[in-house]
Length: 115
Image (cartoon, rainbow, N blue to C red):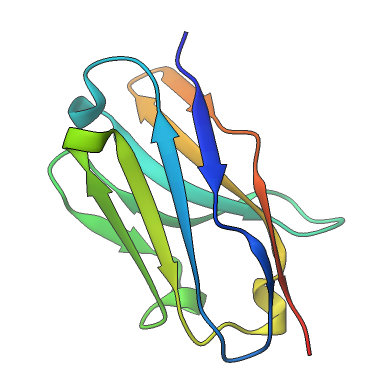
């Protein structure tokens, strides 16, 4: 069973930065597409960024130019560098690993952007 463990969340002031990391257990990490999602209170869980097994990336428009997703296949890790954070970025951030019909989620890490 795959386990995903996120870390790096916290409280940051507007304009600040945070780096989230997600470590996956199991083998064949490089074959999986990896994504970051977020869910604000009372809202649905939405895609933030994805990095595919071939290294291609996609971002939701609201974070383009501010967030960067990366992966280290040797360490089974995917990261999300978040810069110029805004209050509307406040949410629980989840890591997702997927391949075909298989999908696994982490437990989430809270990101709060507030003065």
